[in-house]
Image 1 (cartoon, rainbow, N blue to C red):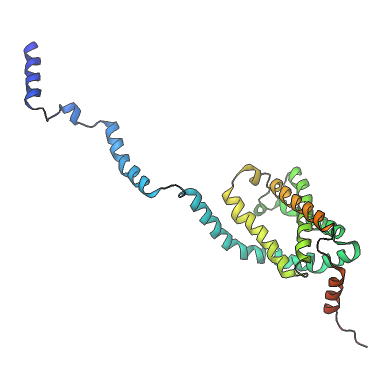
Image 2: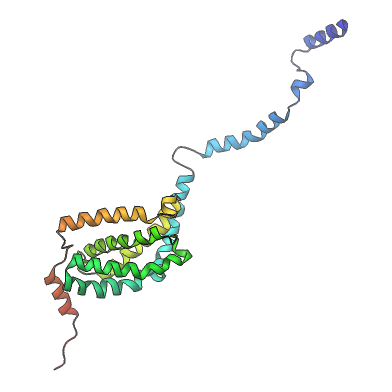
Length: 231
């Protein structure tokens, strides 16, 4: 046995550049590392700081927005609703009750009009009591902001349509894909309520409740659009 060991050591010393068979035969771990190496090198070449999944999500959300905006504009309500809400009802409510109270009245009716949509799957907001309770003040605050925009664009119904469609499309095409969090998927009205609520309070405070309303301008628009009387 000693002679066999001595002969083995002499053979290894005679060929120092050749490793034993066990060392030259790769095991399962080496095979896995060899298979992963090309993929790791490719990933290190293609991925750099600031690139990757977030950038792809931003591009995807932009494409979704470009596709959904015309669909929401035509079929989502703004094109056909705003002629009634801002084109017909708001000028008359402002004339009778003032811009702030008129907006509150219009906001309540606007919210009640949309409540049945909670049971439509496309709507995307669960029909819970909390969501429906939060929805009413959210729409009222939105109405106050839209009233300020309407009055400061000389009563432009077109601007009201575009603002309404832009908000709906941004929530659908940007917020939902980029932030798939429970606060948006289950309680999406909370951040919207906070944002529009704060903005509405600021606008009411800065304009002292007038919200850009000018009775003389409203009277001039009414006279210009009134049909001539036949005597």
